[in-house]
Amino acid sequence: MKILVRLPNWLGDMVMATGFMNQLSHFFPGAEISVIAKKGIDGLLPFFPAHRHAFIFSKEEYKGFSGLYRFGRSIRATESFDLFFCLPDSISSAFMGFASGARKRIGYKKELREVFLTHTYSKPKGQHRVMEYISQLERFTGKEAGPVTVRLQHTFPKKDHIIININSEASSRRLTVPKAVELISSLRKTTTRELVLIGAPKEREFVEGVIQLLPEQHHITSLAGKTSLPQLMEAIASAQLMLTTDSGPAHLGNALGTHTVVLFGAGNENNTAPFHKEDRSVIRLGKLSCEPCQKNTCIQFQTPQCLELLEPEAIIQQVLSNLQ
Image 1 (cartoon, rainbow, N blue to C red):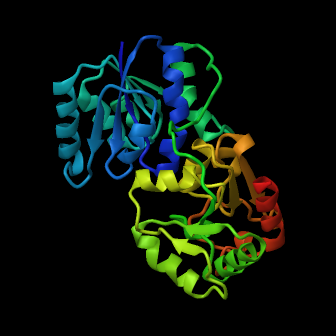
Image 2: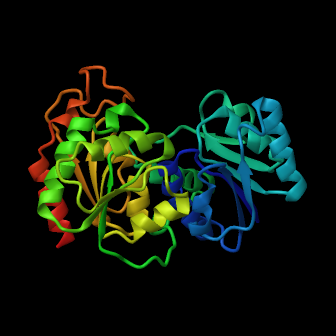
Image 3: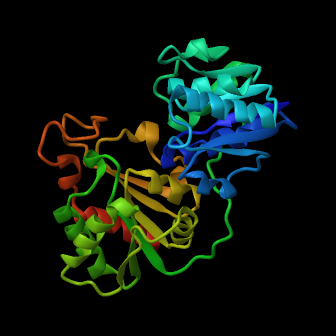
């Protein structure tokens, strides 16, 4: 049995897909697994469960449906696959599987994907995203999943710093500058550990601007825009704790075994919180009628009050209790 998996396009979703990858040996013992990953987050693959082929998709190199078809055919020229599992919901990813020539192609119904997939299902409601992915396996095979783990494999030793992530792709999940300054200043007063702020290259200016506004900048550094994905993973894995917004790095921390304190704004923690509860603490305001809204921008207020109104004292208390 040869299986091809189209992995998700976003960092957090790709981390959560390790739960699916770990289940494949349970559902298909002895199967040979290959993956398709988006260029830019393929740096996760060395930390993934074992796989034979890794096909890296670049949207710039394979533009439009003609590019998708060329990419799929290049996969077909490398290997013939019995099964194709499509974890993203896009029609383009389903078409990619069709072009690969995989005999059976499995995914959820959306955007007329049934044209390109041989087995489609309605997405289950009320499940964590990790279980949404695994549900494809259960419905296709008629078997139940085994114990679920969402872990990235690493050997990074622990050091004595705290990782802080104030960023998110969505402004409704990102801390404002004043809130970030307030929170980091409070944390600086309560611990002597090095505080290390992280972020993507496009977030570097935002992160460094926050640091410049801090009244006390001693033992506070920024790695924003200065690390590769594996280097970022090392910094997170070796940390004593991570304080973060609802974002891709939150899932990284949880999957790497670093206790992660997650500040939730617009997102729904029942669907997208880091999976392993023993390695996470979720903090939500829970006082607004619009929570959680699932919007990428706050439509009720000028800034996301679900994050703005969080009490720094409660957050710091949660951080310190998990450090101890």
